[in-house]
Image (cartoon, rainbow, N blue to C red; front, side):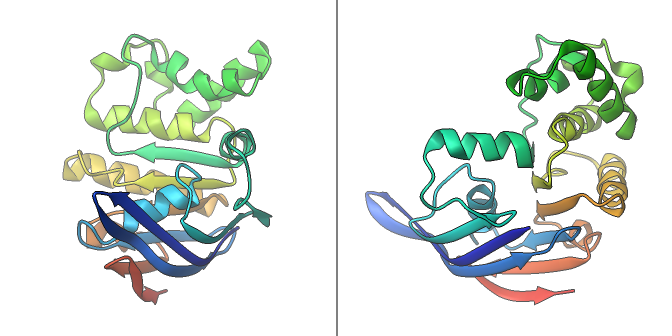
Amino acid sequence: MVLCQNVFKEFKAGTSFVAVNNVSLHVKTGEFVSIIGKSGSGKSTLLNLIGLIDKPTSGNIFIDGIDSSNMVESQLARIRCEKLGYIFQSFYLDHNYSVYKNVEIPLLIANMPSNKRRERVETCLEQVGMLNKLHSKTSTLSGGEKQRVCIARALANNPSLLLADEPCGNLDSENTQVIMEIFQVLNQKGVTIIMVTHDIEDAKKANRIITMKDGKIISDEN
């Protein structure tokens, strides 16, 4: 599913900073992996590299056996659209739109016919228990409800891999439990998930925990 080979990422803004230092990682189809570590450990940078949001300074990243290393932006965008779903801590919802319109956006980008879009949006919202909010403006939702809409949006294109960056970082314990249960159900249905979190209790909901420090993987436990 995901293969990282000797991935190195250096940022140069004034002084040089190595965010990911020679990381090699294999995530198999159907795994639920959490990546933990302190702030600055490189965990979110690694997730962005796997998600093809950023490019490594050196090394190779394979998604479903496809080497992304020498791809141009249009090729990377196609993989992001067809194979990857993203969930962020800050939601990134358009609050001028309804729940339906927000979840529909990836399907519009993929040029899915309107009759199929409706069916797919409703299916995804039902998976996260938000079908009853179909026509609500996202501005009226609670934090937990917004994150569930984000999960539905991430599922819209039926991705091979779901990437979540601190998905419960802005949520209380009750909503965190709801989100983690959704992830576990999705994983049981075969969705591969890689989740970055600072919370060890959330990390334990995965079946594999990777710990990062100073840009390196220091432990990898099942």
